[in-house]
Length: 128
Image (tube, rainbow, N blue to C red):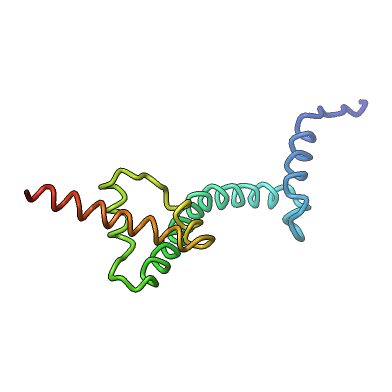
């Protein structure tokens, strides 16, 4: 009997997987079974860390804003700033506030002072 040549589908699948893992070290880039295991592991880690990255950046922005606000000397904190921003309906997200805090502190101080004045005015108007 003559030898039967197999199809190309399995070989194409393996080459596609090996291209994904070509930058891995050792057997993780050479052996088909370990390549598939490492591919699954890499994709799971990437999916998990996309959410974690969003959390980490939000924490970083909050920390930066809080540090600059407390540095001004007034007994004012991040939570009060955000509360007053929502009261005045000035909706700046935390990323923008953190950039303002780092690049132009005076601008953030002006925003917070204006918010404090408007908040005091509204509270005194509500009492009358």
